[in-house]
Image: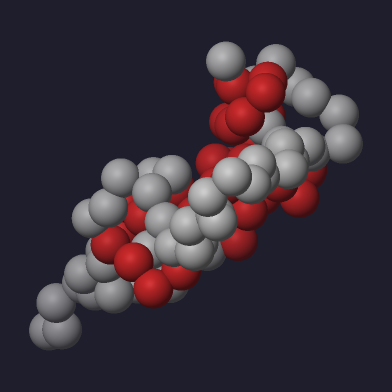
Length: 84
């Protein structure tokens, strides 16, 4: 009898992402217009959990390059402002 697949090797399902995105939407006080951001955040969190990383931390190869000294980064419209 084959053993059950390891949770880290199994693909994240649409249903799992949907449930996590809904949970995030509720935790962020049901904001309008953030469905894509919440979906991507949910997918990132689930992937990080599977890989044993903390959610919200960039993967080593996808870390953004540091800004040049003396330049300020433009603020992004994101959920960070409503998360606090």
